[in-house]
Image 1 (tube, rainbow, N blue to C red):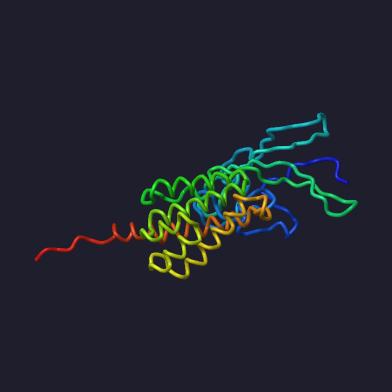
Image 2 (tube, rainbow, N blue to C red):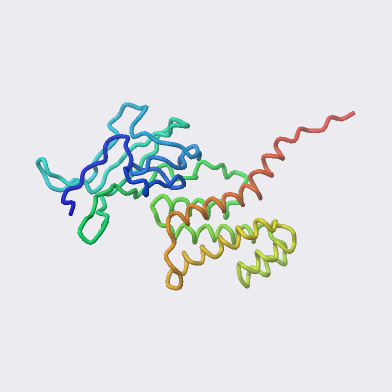
Length: 250
């Protein structure tokens, strides 16, 4: 049984390949994944290239040469954009078997909020607000709350983009509103599967008494799906409209 927590070495990740998840947000145990600043999947180095002390203990127990560091702040620098992300981590004892365990630093919070770099100027306020609240829930590892807000963003999309028939259907259920948008041609059939998945997982987050708990990975997947819909319906059309040059008069 491990009896003492130690801080992970600077710039190193876990030796356990099972901890590796390229879709998960970076921390010292797995310094890879989507960058909260540039959004690209990248590798990260603790403290580089900025020459600073990259791990700061914010909670210390014990004393002398034997101490526990329940929480620490780490700066991870993206190899792509060269910018830093602040991660607050907590020491957790992970049971490996009935007689053995190990101590790991597990993430609690990221700054900046992952995904917040997406430009939302062309997105209606209700949709953007629900999506960004979902991001904030993800940044503190609250996946049930996150997927509930992503589902809320989807409901606002149906309300804003749907026909009068879709809006009437929405008053009955979100599933009916989505189906009506597909029937009307306002939502491609390909996106119907996305929207249905968002609705189902969102329901699980909002009604935990009837569903299994939502994992952080599922919430991150849902974030990507909702962002894909937002980009397709709002961001890309607005970008294309700005790229169209005025026609010359003859």
